[in-house]
Image (cartoon, rainbow, N blue to C red):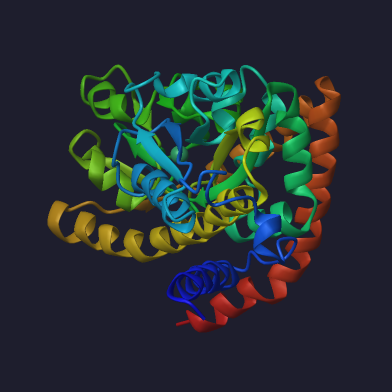
Amino acid sequence: MSTSDRRRFLRHSAGLGALAATGLLAGCQKAADCGPATDANGSREVIHWKMVTTWPLNFPGLGTGANDLAERITRMSGGRLVVKVYGAGELVPAFETFDAVSSGTAQLGHSSAYYWKGKVEEAQFFSTVPFGMTGQEMNAWLYHGGGLELWRETYAPFGLIPFPAGNTGVQMAGWFNRPIRSVEDLQGLKMRIPGLGGEVLKKLGGTPVNLPGAELFTALQTGSLDATEWVGPYNDLAFGLHKAARYYYYPGWHEPGTTLELIVNREAFNALPEDLQAIVESAAMASNNFMLSEFYARNPRALQTLMKEHGVTPEPLPQDVLRALRQAAGEVVEELAARNPRAGAIYQAYKGFMDESRAWVAISDRAYLRARDAE
Ligand code: CA
């Protein structure tokens, strides 16, 4: 074997090794099937993509999750597909992420589907549903229960392909400037709470507002909001929300396991060789799992910091408040399903999967956790 043959062989083996390690060999058995790593002249073609996000650049958990995903794509592709991340407001404002990727201003977006309810309200099922599925259940539905196919159909008219790309796990109910002791305390409450959760609050007499994360602290501190939810201890501590409001309630009935999304401009995606398409898909899947794990690792530590260093005492929402919220949540989702046939079809699929899961989780996770943590 000549030196140049040997070099080519090693390069080829290393390439296949990297693909095998990431489980991408299915459908890409020969290097030739995977698209050329070099062009006809032997020079590398490097593709540069932009990723816009709804998060402040480098914001812990969400912004760093977007960074993680961009780095994975860049690394897994051996630098053939280089992704640059833009924080909210850098290239486009936070809530223009969807349109920017749809129009091709950016090829990628990192966000969550409930932010697009003004355009496509049935998308909210792919983010989170009040009193709906947990992060683990969402992943089960999306990957193995037909959820992702429904999501792709929902985004197809916008020229977008969605991938699950992160999950926060169960969130906190949020920070409040006044105590919530009864359902009446929700009357007139001006609260930042996105998606279906906001509609639930409205049904019980509150005023839901949607604001990007970066504006929450000031809005709460100046009293233009009475309450805000954000995510959980890890992210809430990063924004310093404990300095702006006194009461911290749980559980996050409105966001029991919010799926974050990678949206890809379809035209740009279809122009990629098959191996780079598989890399985008696999990087999103890795990032999805990595972020959920990160929240389960960092929330407990941040909770300790909030309690021990900042004197925060999280309180449970009263049972009758949770019951009223659950009742209102059922009505909100049923009304959405009734007025929008596409939402109705997605809701049926979502509910069917959740009902099956409920019976299993009752005798697995729930029974186990009760046994493990019993006094
Ligand atoms: Ca939230």
